[in-house]
Length: 69
Image (cartoon, rainbow, N blue to C red; front, side, top):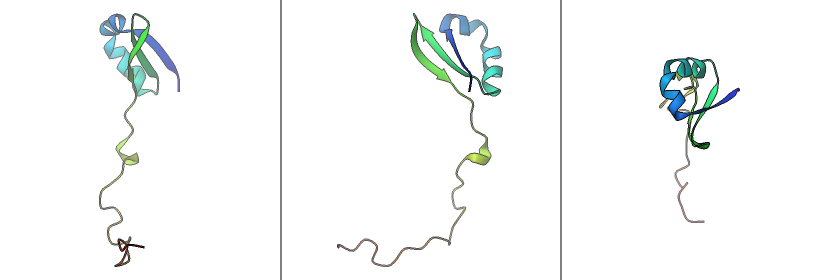
């Protein structure tokens, strides 16, 4: 992943371009007086996120899973 460092004041004027770069995989670090303040990263596609209930009924627990040992 390519990393680009840019001052927040400069980023305000080119936000649309920065977002387009992030979409292609560039990580952008925003600085203020050369101190990192924030990071712009691409959002992972929905297909890589967890899906609730995907394995419903496939995982079981014994009845005494919480019994003292």
